[in-house]
Length: 254
Image (cartoon, rainbow, N blue to C red; front, side, top):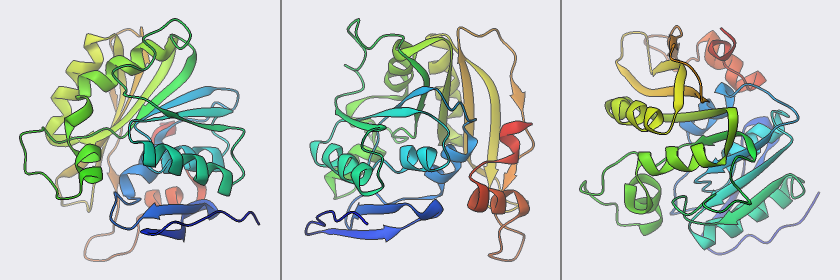
């Protein structure tokens, strides 16, 4: 088992699919949204993928653990997190398949070397306007607020890096769904599949998962919703058990 230095203010956890993950104690933590986005993406084993806004690298690690893509470039603007992605890649023996890139998504793929080179692009982007209440932790501010790029910037970066007919995946808040759809269509990432996520069957949706096609024709398919918990319990539904055990959503194949 490989030994990796754990720095002050960090901790090592074992998460889904036996991934060993170094996380910053005061930083943004691994959550359900990351797990669901990884499960929502369809496998394309020979694909080259790009993650826009990598954080700790957990979504990319989840994808690699389930052999969804051949290799992933993980773009992250914060140097400390770029270095963390590289350490997590090495810790899980993915250093040759997961590559950390310290870059602002607004600058990514602006030159000819990166443009239209990826089969897949995905992101769990900041979802709060900069005018909202800021968290005291600057790292969390950058991850949650549109300080270094709006949803339009993230979609534009995905459109630049994707080949024609490449796939774009995103998890986002439902109250900003229209912003996401507008941003995707502005750069010709046509929404093709959408799944709403509910805590229970009686709860309003809290998240939405969207798949887009670069250069695709109009035609959106809304799947049945994903319900996380059985009503009145903390017991996972059958769909969520599939995510936890197998790493995919049944809705991703419907």
